[in-house]
Every structure is written in C-alpha cells, then in structure tokens.
Amino acid sequence: MNRVSQIPTESIFEKDNWGELKQFTDARIALGHTGASLPTKEMLNFSLSHASARDSVHMPFEKERIGKELEGLGFSTLQVNSQASNRQIYLTRPDLGRLLCSSSEDLLAKLPTMEYDLTMVVADGLSAKAVHRNTIPLIKQMLGYLAQLKFKLAPIVIAEQARVGLGDAIGGITKSQFVAILIGERPGLSSPDSLSVYLTYKPHTGLLESERNCISNIRPEGLSYEKAAFKLAWLIEHANLRKCTGIELKDNSEDPSTYLTIRPIGQITG
Image 1 (cartoon, rainbow, N blue to C red):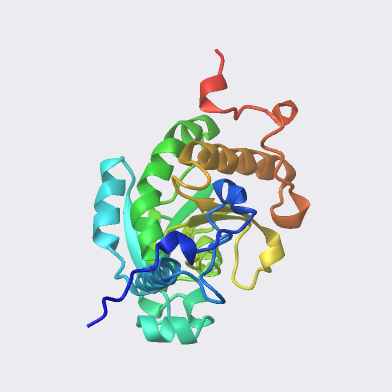
Image 2: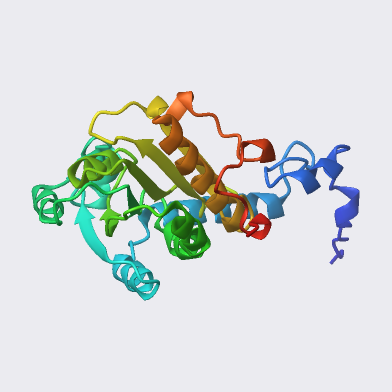
C-alpha cells in the first residue's frame, strides 16, 4: 500500500498582500485563500461568529438582574413591556416594539406627577448580550456627570422587547424633557454585543429618527464607557441649551472650545 504524502499547509495557503491592514479593523479582510476557496479555519470562524450573533438576538433579557444592579447604584427602577408579547412577534412586527402595552402605560401613569428632566430607559433591543455586558459600566461612568447636570431624574425604566421608539412613548408619559434609551444594537459578525444610546428632546410617540442623537458601538472593543458617558453628558448639556436634538445638534464633544460645565472627568477643575 502506498503511503499518501501530506501536503504542507504553507504550500497551498496563499496570503493576501494587504494583510497588514487587518491590524486596523475587525472586519473580515485579507483572509487568504486555498485555490479558489477560503481556508477552512476562516469558514469555521465565520460560522462561529454567525452563531454568536444569532444567540445575541434570541438571548433572554435578564431584566431582574439589571434592575438589582441599578438599584445598588442608588436608582429606583420599574419594568415595562412593549406590545410585542414575545421574541418572534418582536422580530416580525417592529411597529409593536415601539408601543407600550396597556399595563405598562398604566404603571408609568402612576408615577408622581412632575416634570422630569431626564428619563433613562434600558432596553434589550436586538442584543440583550450588549445590555448585560455594557449598561452598568456605562451608567457608573455617568454618575459624576449626572451630579453636575443636577437634573431631576425619573426612575430608570427597564423595557423588554423594545425598539428605539419605545423611549419616546415612555418619555411622553413621564413628561420628561429628555429621554435617553440604552439599547442593544443589531449584532454584527464581529460585534454581537454593541450598545447604543439614543437621546431625544421633548419625546413623544411618532418622532422621526432625524430628531435623535445616537452614540453607538459602546463596548470595550469599540467606544469606551468613559468616552461614551462624556459624549452623552455633553449632548445633554448642549441640547438643554439649544432646546433640540438630532440633525440640529452636531456632536462636537471632541472640541474643547465647546466645553461648558460638562468636561471630561479627568479635566474637571475647581
């Protein structure tokens, strides 16, 4: 019997000449090839990332744990649901994810009658994993800025089966000047756990997407909690001054000449 000789891997795997660019991005570039096909390792990595993204979409929302951790930071919380009663409906009926169910509307309506400056909403969105991993670290970074803003805060609302627009419905009922919804982004193959924050002035049901400011890709591998917290605080302060959010409010938080009361925590002076 003839012994089949093993072909060395290096003789069939061809690298791409622009592989050095991989150090600048998590995108799937310069994967190399074996003949006309991708290497088996890269195909397996793709399948693993795809499975991770799917898991993020369908992962149960640990709202009770999030609530307890927020209460441990000194916040009061309450839990609401959209009109999407389960994940399948949520994924196929985005419109229902923007509307509160009747019991949640009643719950919010029972809050003490007052005009809040800010309502923060923590929502599962399309990646509960992003919320589980990033929400508490981000809010911890916000504590110092919230103290400087001296805003009257509504209880933090924890929303399940929520789309971004649900924040508008919540802010409208609480009569908040601003609503900031922290929500899991649609998972990507290299980022299944990215958190976004959407800030809206004078929220109410039916607002256009152009009337919000968005801070995205909040995670250790993306925008840091420290930078995201400062951006949000900067936007809140300037939105409060200009009475607007969205396309009328450009994020110039990286320009020190725009700083007012809110400055990066490490740069605050007496």
